[in-house]
Image (cartoon, rainbow, N blue to C red; front, side, top):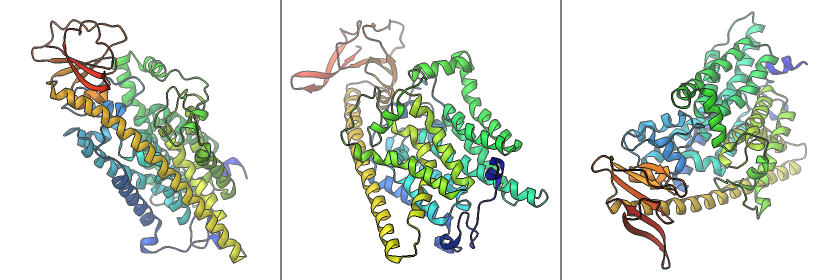
Length: 508
C-alpha cells in the first residue's frame, strides 16, 4: 500500500460501521444517551461543571489577559499590543468585555465558551473513532490541569487546541469522502460540505489566534494533501491560513511598517527563535508553574511529571497499532505543533503544548482501549482492566494536585497585586489616569481603569506640564520613585515589618 493509499483509504469498519472496530472490539450502534455525540456533550458539560466548582472565578485578570481584554473594553484604555499578539482571543471575550471587565462575568462567559469549544472540536472525530476511544480521548484532555486552568481565562492557547482538533479531524473526513466519491463515479457524500467548512474554519481560527501556530498546523495537513494529490484540500488549507493571517498582516502595515518587520519584532519580544532546550523546560513545568522565564526552576519530584513523557509514547503506539489515517494524522499533527515549543523557544509555559495534548490524546486513548480490550482468559482481562483503571485514576489525581498548587499560587499572587491597586485607587487615583513606573503592568492598569507608562531603570518621569486638567498621574513602585516624582505625595501601601514594600506617589 502506498502513502497515497493509506492517507485516502476509508477507515476499517466493523459490523456496527464504527471506524476501526472489528472482531471482539466492534461496537454496536448506540441509541439515546450512548450515542458518541451525546457522550461527548456530557463530557463537555462535565468540563464546564469542573471549572465552576474548582476554579476561582473572582480572580483578577493577569498581564496577558488584561492586554487582550482592554482591546475590546471601551471603559478602559487599550494596553500596548505587542508584535507577537493576534486579535482572535479578543473577539471571543468581546461580548462580555464590551459591557464590563468584571473578572467573574468574563470567566463565567469563557467557561461556557470553552465547554462548547470542547464539544465542537471533538465532534468530527465522532465518525472517525470508536465510542470508547472518543470518550477516553476527550476525557483525558478535559481533565489535564492545564486544560481546566485555562478554560475560563482570556488566553488563546486552548482555542488553538480546539482549532487544531477540528482541522485535523475534518482533514481526515475530507480524504475519506473524496475516496468514497471516486469509488462511486464522482458522487459526493451527503454532509461532506461541513467537513470542508470545518477544515477551513479550524485552520483559519488558529491563524486568527496565534499565526505562528497556524503554520505548524498547516505543515502536516498540507503535506498530507500533497501526498494524496488532493489539490482542493491543499487550496483550502492555504486559503484558510491566508485568511486567518490577514488581520495580523494588515495591522503589521498599520503599526509596524509591514508584516516582515512585525515578524522580526515578534521574534525579539519572544527572545529570538533559535534552537533551545524547550523540551527540558516544558518537562520541568509539566505540573506548573504557569510560566517560567528564565526557566531556572528545579524539578524536585520528577516522578509526578512522568505523564508528560508517557503521553507521546502512548500516542505513537496507538497510531501504530490502529493503522488508520485518523490516528496517524492526530499523532503526526500533534507532534508537529509541539516542535517550536520543544526546540525553538528558550522558556516554558505549559499552555503552549495544549494543541499537542489535545491531538495526542486521540491515539493515546486508542492504545489504552486496546490494552484494556477483551482477552481469551477472563481473569487476565479483568486484571488488565483494573490496572488501566488504577493508572487513569492516578493520572487524574496528579492533575488535580497540580491544579490545586497552580491555582493556590496564582490566586494568592493576583489577589495581593489587586489589593495593592485597589488601595491606591481609594487614595484618589481614578480615570482619566496614568500609572507610571518600572513595576507597573497591564493587569494593574486594568484594575485602576488607567493607562500605563512603563519607565526603564533610572529614566525620569516625562514632562507633564501639558497634561489635561484633572488627569491623575501616579507612580506605583517597590523602589525609590523615578526622577521627577520625588515630590509627589507619598503613600505606603504595603510593609514588610517596618520596611515599605509597595509605595504610591500621586502627583498633586
